[in-house]
Figure: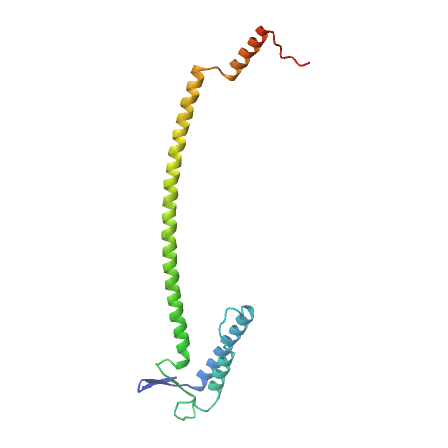
Length: 174
């Protein structure tokens, strides 16, 4: 393979052995692409079968590709400026980058909201715990007051039983 640079254009001259090796590699890549395309058809956005066919035709033909000066050996010219058909791809990449930036901003916003709500929940939890402790203290105080100043349920039952017995009222079922 011979590489020369003329006027901001790279010119590559290929030998016959290199072309046959390139054809084998191209066939392997094409086979792998076709099997993967059959297994995962939704994964590939573009159909590259025509691309592989055109590459095989370019490598096997004796005619130089368009834009190259005529020579019996296959010659390929590569222009460093992107072709016009790549512009939609560039636009798509730019669109995807802006979409990614928007998603990152939305993710940051949602993270801030979640953090704020977690903080509010923590404050409410602490407030609830404090109120629960206060209520338990009040209940314990009331329980102590009733136990020391009044009768228990068992004591009240016995009092009423003896009181009714003294009054002549019996609680037997007839």
